[in-house]
Image 1 (cartoon, one colour):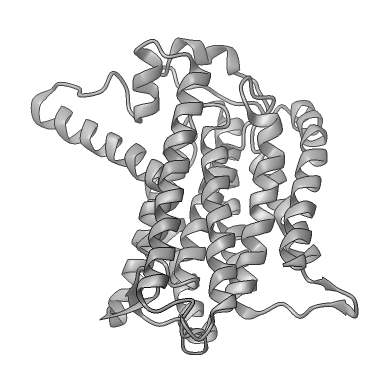
Image 2: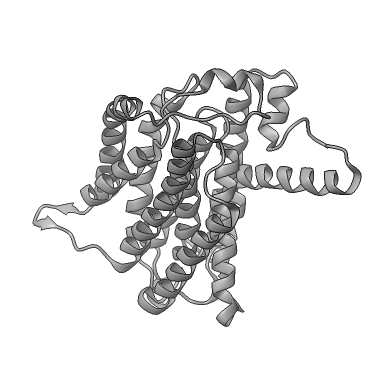
Length: 347
């Protein structure tokens, strides 16, 4: 428990104190946000706000993760599962950074081409899946609250890619209002702290020896990421002083998918990240209906822009969507605990 507290507090402090420094540095370098021309008119005033704040979240989370391994006798050894989660998160941050950097360098609101971003996600997912199975020892079956009997075999790597791509793109789509994506992500990451610690305390119940991954390692990293997001949110709430950019959104989405896979709670992520699912589905439905009928269901997709254009103040949309995210997380954790009790937990 002390390790989790150290990781969370260190991530929070580093992010809270480091973000204003990054704001000044990024502003001097001209790393300002570019706004989509077809977006809400009220967003035009945000043009030039420092972006790529995901670098701060990443740096603070790494610091928190290492702080969580400080013991009375020195540095506690880091396990393969934790290092793999960290490595995958860094890789997604690098992909997002490339996307953001191209936007700034080319002075346009679109960065990497879709094929390049798809290829980057494919490579990261492939490497992660290979290392998760061969090095960490994660099974190739589908999981919900724990591993199931549905073994995907070689198709597991396709499943890993679909999960990672859906999660990273889902958070990326949600990142359109000040603090919406990072605040919602913090809630999901907090849930993974609970899930990881609970699995650690009840290892026999979750067959941890057979799954290979170390849930406490993932819980430490989740705590560090949660603290880093909370500190960044202090400066990212409306009106935002800095945006996390694709550096942050792709990183957070990929990180959550990686944690779900390593904790054998793959399908649970769909419930915990319910807000991101809704945001993604709103875009898919909008595109499909428009291509078929030439009409739009929403005033603008993702759906948070629909309510904004319908007249809701931006902060109202953000807070209400945070509430929806919190309800999804609470429902997911409730199901997780209900499964534990139904299988004979606490007896």
